[in-house]
Image (cartoon, rainbow, N blue to C red; front, side):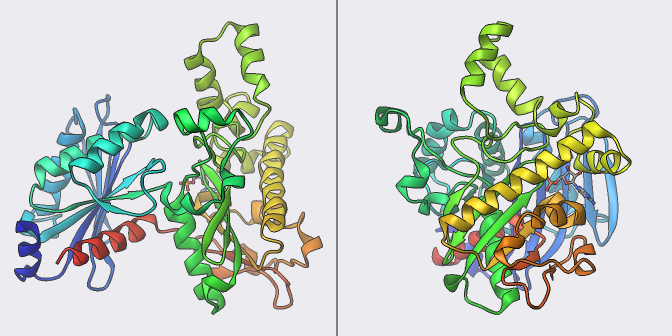
Length: 413
Ligand code: AMP
C-alpha cells in the first residue's frame, strides 16, 4: 500500500524506468508517461568485464563514464546516480521513479501477460531458468538489484514469450514423444513478443484498420531475428521455438536445420553439449557462413554488394529463409493483408526488403522502389495497387514495457 500511496501522493507525473538487463549489459530508459516521452536513456556495457562503461543520453547529448562496474547492482546504482546528477540527470529524488518495468525473456507457460513481481513471481522466474539459462538469470539479477535500490517502486515483469501464448497446440508442439512436453514443457515458446505485438498494432494503425480484422506477418529482422503470423491481433505461429535458436538465419545463430546434424557433429568432432550449443548459437548464422568474417549485416551487405561471393551467399540465404517463412505464414493464415519489417535490418535495409519481396510477387505484392529507400521511419513501401501492403515499422519494445507497467500500477490503485 505504501507504493500506491506514493502514486496517489501527488509526486507529479508518472515516471517509469524501463530496464533490460542482459548477461553483461543493462539498458535503461526513463519515461514520462504523461506524454510517453523518453526523458533519458542509455546502457551500461561490459559489466564485470574489462573496459566497462556507462553511456548516458539526454537532450541529444551523450555522456560516457568509464568507472569499472563489477556487477548489475553497481551498474544500476550508477544509472540511478546519473539520473539524479545535477548536470546529466532528469530527476531530483529517487521517489520520482514511480515504477520499474523489466524486460524478461522467458515466462514459460506461466505468464501470458505482464505482472507485478512479488515473491511468487520471483519463484516462477527461477523455475523458468532451465528454459532460458542464458537470458533469465541476468534478467533476475536486474530485478533483484532494482528491488534493493528502489524498494518503494513496484516492479513489473514484461515477457518476450507472453504474446505467443495464444499459439494453438498444433503450432507449439513438436513431433517428439508427448511425455517430453508433459515432463519438461518442451514446446515452441517464441520470443521478441513485445516487438511483434507493438509492430502489429502500429501496422494496423498505419493502415487505418482494426488489428482484429487483419492478417499481418511481422518480421523482426535484427541480429536475432524472428517472424510471427498475427491473425486478428493474436500470435498464431512464430519462427523462434523452444529457444531463440530456431527459425531464420541470424547473426550468429543457425536457425532451422536437421536436428540429426547435432549428434552427427558431436560424434565426428567429439564435442560436448556445451561446445555444440556454442557452435550453433554463437558461431553459426552469417558469421559461420562467412568463416567468422562478421555477424553484422551491414558488413555482409557491403561486401556482398561489392562482389564478394561468400558474403553474397550468406546474404542470399538470410533473405531466402525470410521469404520462405512469409510464404509459410501466408498459408497458416489462409492469406496475408500486410507484411511489416522491423529491427536493425528490417528497418534499415532496402536490399533485404526488396530481395525478400521479390519472392512474393505471386501474392500480388508490389514494392515501390522509391518508397523502399526509407530507413528507420514508419512508412508504407508497397505500391497503391499492391494486394499485400508492406510496411516499415521501427519497433519500440521499451514503450510497450512502460505502457504495461503503467497499466498494472494504475490497476493497483
Ligand atoms: P538489432 O539486433 O535490431 O539491433 O539489429 C542489428 C542488425 O541490424 C545488425 O546486423 C546491423 O548490421 C543491422 N543493420 C543496422 N543498420 C543496417 C543497414 N543500414 N543495413 C543493413 N543492416 C543494418
